[in-house]
Length: 339
Image (tube, rainbow, N blue to C red; front, side):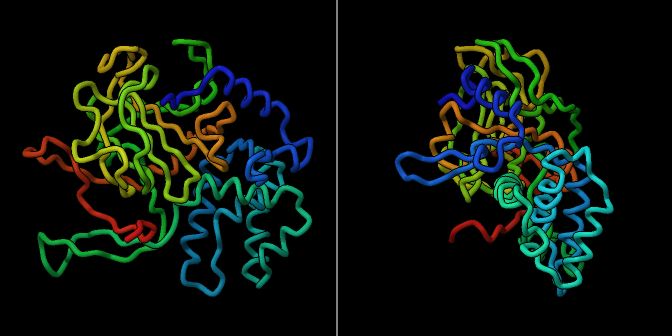
């Protein structure tokens, strides 16, 4: 299964980008001819790290209080106000809407009449819907040295794709040119590091793809349990790309070790290092309708600022020499996992 963009896909995505929001909300949707259901056909996620972080903290800080703020609703409101152009962002706009919410107004009331609010709420929920919530995670037990206990928490439950204690570099390379096989745009973020760096599941989900791809080399694809996000981790290590405990169809929990950074790819032959620099290609595809999953109308978003945000939550790992694999130190219980 080809999980990298085809030439037609690139043309579709970037042609739509040029159109912006000038044609009204209807231009952002398509119709499934079989089900006759409307679905979003385009998302350009441009929220900067600073705004993601600020709204995230407002959400977490308000947990358990009389007025619970929702960071996705706040972001959707700001996006609707700015037409998606966050270069226009002013903190005073965020402060003003938070003040109204804390005074008892509902977001539906505040956003009433904003043409694109519903679109941005659905789109941004598809991007960030699995990032924040309640969970239980192991921590050191102060009353029993050397033992752990589960602690209930609310907050960021998505993890950095790079394990704690391992460094990497990246820049916003979304849309850069790529030429292997055919000329196309880069639809992810390359995280440059060292061969063997443990790669982490960003979100709880089901492994849908696990194997070789001529472009991505050894790669693994994980679908969020709500079906909206497909995480693509590519160019994994030669000879030992994946955690040996995993198989296609397994459910992994956010923070689990899923594989190791490498240099594989750009080859029709399996297990070949044809990438010059060790790195993880990390991508996120949004799926509003199953016709988008493998067709020419795929939606891949710029995850650069999301990767920066995820540095706030890193998974500590350690090696099990008997199993020759790395595993997380602190297990997590994610309530979205079915019993």
